Image (cartoon, rainbow, N blue to C red; front, side, top):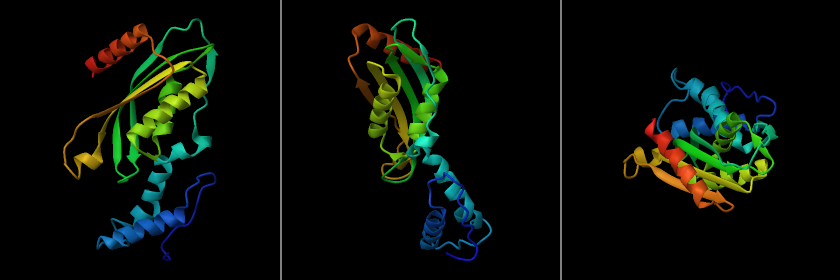
Amino acid sequence: MTQHSQLTQPEGENIDREKAQRGTRILLESLGEDPDRLGLKDTWERRIPDAFTTLTEGNRHEAKPTMRTFDAKNDDLVVKTGIPFYSLCEHHLLPFHGIAHVAYRPSEEVVGLSKIARYVRWQSRQLTMQESLTNDLASGLAEELDAPMVLVEMNATHLCEAMRGVETESTTTTRTTIGELTDVEREQFQAAVARAEGNQ
């Protein structure tokens, strides 16, 4: 580490800033760049460690949103569509991003709708694959809400495909269901997703 580095690590970050700085500096040098030139000095000293601190919040339990619940009036299906998410491919460290649709059948309690979006954002902030993230969201929400049925569908564009490899921007869809979905609930979910996509 050079004398230029700033080795401050805010309490509770759970990221080794010194290693992040050193690693980014080495990567820049491997590309033939001068890490100390004006445009790059803040990149390895501050910006990359700060960015990955935010982008890996899903690894830190203390960053998980509080899932405040309310008594459920009935067990009708709850559907939240059009939730934007941004995550990082664990193979290439490039983003994949898109829209998540979430449905659950409450048991005795429901959660505030904004909390579902916050939970999706928190879970998404980690190095992962879309398939794993979809499963993590469904199983995590089922546990958090004690819900007998949770369905999560994610539609995403992967920059590792769009920027390298086949260099084609396409959409990948994954879906995970915890519990048994009735035919009526499946129709309700599909109709809600269709309305959401029709309004985009």
